[in-house]
Every structure is written in C-alpha cells, then in structure tokens.
Length: 520
Image (spheres, rainbow, N blue to C red):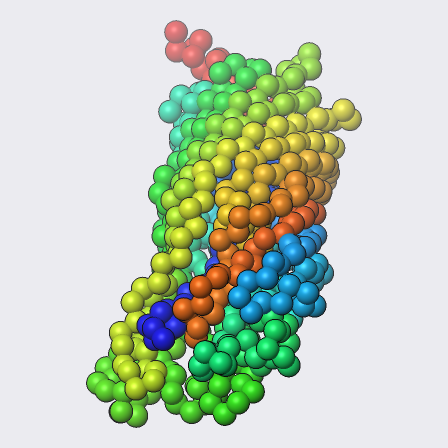
C-alpha cells in the first residue's frame, strides 16, 4: 500500500467542499435591495452607497452624507438524485443508497452589508463592509447519499472597503475602492471510505456482508472536517461614470486584481471502529499507527506531538462590468423611469485548482514522511452575464418601483459538478419597491434565481478510498441530477442629510450667473 498516497488523499478530501466559501461565478445575488430589485443592473446608475462595489466612479452622483444598512435572506432549494450505480468492484448496485435523493436542510442564510459616503458632487469618499451575495451555510443529511461530496459548510467572507471618487468634468467621474478581503471562518465536512484492505481474501468493504457498498452503514466510513481563516486578502475596484446627455449615462468598473486567499487552520478526522482488531482508520489513529506529527519529528520511533494544521489556497477572479442606461424625464426634467443593460464578465478560469498544504509529517506503518502539497483540479470556466433593470416612479420620487432580469453562464464544468458549489447556468428575475420618508428610505426586493436541472453522467467526483488506493475501478459519486433554485429577500434602510435640494442648487446657479455678469 502506498502510504503517502493514503495520507494525501485523506487530507485532499477534506477540502473537497471548499468552494462553498465563495460565490455563474459563485455569487448568486446582489447586495442592497435597490440593486437587488434591478437584478444587479446598476453600473451606470450608481446612485447608492453600494457603488463602492458596483462602480466607485459613480459616487460623485450623490451629494451630502448617505448611509445604508441592509441584509439579504437567502434560501436554497436544492435536490440531488444520485444516478443508479452499476456494479463496480465490490460495490452492491442494489444497496439502500445506490440511487437516492437528498435535499439540503431548510436554512435561511442572512447576509448583512453596510456602506456610507460623503461628497459635494465634485468629489466623494466612502467605505463599507459587505460579503459576496452567496449562501454561506449549507447542511445536508450526514448519512445521506451526498456525504462523499459534502455534509456541511459554514463560511464567512467579507470585504472591508474604502473608496474615493472625483469629477474630471461635469459629465465624467472616476473612482477607486481598496479592499481587504477577510475570511474569519470557513468550516467544511465531507466523508471518505476509511476501510483498509487487509488481504486479498479480506476486502476493504466489509459491512454486514461482503457485498455492502461503502456508502451503506459501514464502520469504516470516516468523517473529515476542516476549519480555516484568512484576514489578509487584498484587491481593488476601479470605476468610470459618464453622463453623455440628459437621457444617456454609461458606467464601467472592474476588479483589477484577483483575490488570493491563503487560509490557515486545523483539520480533524473521525471514524467508527472497524469490524476486526486493528481495522479502520479510527483504530489505527487510536493505536498510534497513523498520525500527523510536528515537522521537527526525526523518527517514526519518536514520541512526537501531533500537528493537524493545514492551509488552503484559492483565487477569486477579476471581473468587468459595463452598463448603459436610458433615462426618461418629464417636462420639468425630473427622472420618471430608467432602463439599464449591464454586461458582466468574470474570469473564473483563474480558479483551476485548490492547493492544500500541511505543516506536519505523516507517521504511519513504521514510516515517517514529509507531506507534499495536494492539488485538486477544478478547471472552472469564465462566465458572462447580461442584466437588465429598471426604476419607475409613477406617483413621484417618494415611491419607486423596480424590476429586473438576468442570465448568467455556468462556471462549473459538468464533469466536476459537485454540491459544494452550484454554479450552473442561471435565469433570474427581481421585483422591488422603495419608500422615501424625508431623509429616511426603506427598500425591499425579491429575487428568484432558477438553474436549469443538470444531469451528470461523466462525473470525475469520486468516492475516495485512501486506505485502499490500488482498487482498479473508481466509484463516481457525482453522477445524477441536480435541481436548484434560490429565493432571495432583500431589505434596506438608508439615511441621508446635507444634500442641497434642487431649489437651493438653482438659486446657487443663478447667483453664480449674476456674479459673472457683474464681473463683466
């Protein structure tokens, strides 16, 4: 048996669920109910403190002080039906989990965000703290047919942001946001087959009978968990806003740098007792035959302290947003409605792998070996999206209605489809409304994001058997049908003060014109 292969596979599997930390791209929805109600078509409009993310160049559109606090309530409705398993090796195709359906446990993920800014029209400064519009927590039946892909995921990722913008002319503004990407928590769970092959006559899958499948009740199934954090990622967003005419505006923004996450933490392994003495991962660990020890351990015979520290590295992509909006105005020049179209490109192909590193050494079966980095290929695709959104105020500016729709291409290739990240083709629609009560604004929105069912027949996601790596036939666990829909409710509160009203601005303009006439 290849001991190094054994250990590396165990630890690699811990990270199989890692992409749930992120958000086709990973992000499903938008921050801020006024933006959510437009399905994210906001690059050219940009009249909200969350422009620090969507287009910092548009911050000069706001005058005075503006603060926003909001939250998304996201529900994922997901069903995975695993395909019938053909007989492979000792796998029993008629076992209770050979073809089964599992749903995610009901859970509402709450994603808060806040932002604020101050400006006088010629310049603006702002800041905020927000996370990606994604489902951070997911839970599944720990004994369900999906457990070799994921049993749980709890993740928090946030961007601490400072922004600045300035007008280069009356119609043209630029802005920049600097961001610290922080991941204070990321915890994942996944199962592996921890059975060990004792001899040719004693197969590794020895449940109640010799033909039991590894995903049936089996004392050799091992559960792995990883908990890591990283507070030091960095990126920047640049934006441009241009008012081409009273009826047309355009916006362009881009995340200039990929976000490099280098998380560190610990992992744990647990398993039931084997059916025979010395069989099963837990028995091997309890007896000291298998362990990860400190890197300064000199010999397998030494009594070295255990060291289960691990690191996870992955990359979040740069992106580009281009938007154009048409503005409808009444006879007095006040805006009554707008229609915006945004094109969004996200370079998810930068995420071609996860890289896992270990501080300790492997101590197993009278050997002591250095653990090398584990590389898990993903080979994700770049994504493209088109977003259309509109505001309309039939009763005046105190009440605004919003609507939007979008389509986004898939980031995840069919062969690497996993329940850890459901980045398939997406169709979405949004509705929203906002009420202005003096300086206070209240906004609500609802978004439905539907992903057409995906049927996978060529899965490269396998049930891993780290203690029996020489088995000839791999067992795919990712084949089957994936059904997923996201429901998002967004609520926002805004408060503004210090902005001159239109009458004051007109008086100032008249005074300036009079002063110019007097000077002449």
